[in-house]
Image (cartoon, rainbow, N blue to C red; front, side, top):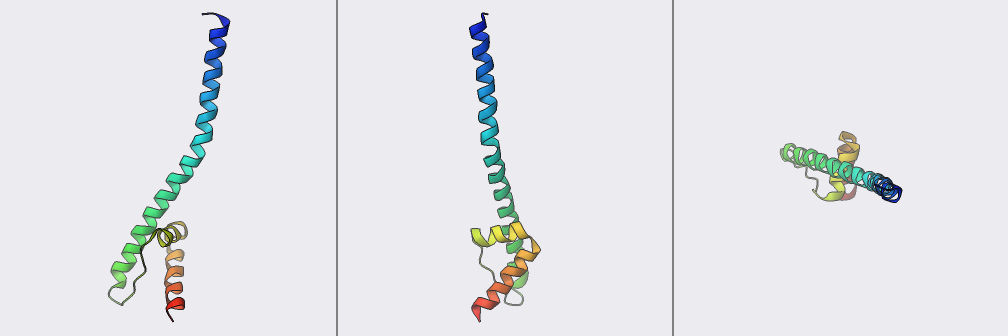
Length: 88
């Protein structure tokens, strides 16, 4: 193996490493957003299921699921409060 071939392999590996690092961060954020959205959807579904007894309903859509997913229980309380503020 001559020096030019070895340098080409090293350059290719460095380029592959750089491309992997550039694509890893956006994919990590995307999967974190997806997991939080699914958690928020499950939390809102639970609130709607339990809230059916008292007439409470919060719409299940991507925005409310992400708010509930990122903020957790305070986010659900915020959505309930906004529901009552805007429905009055």
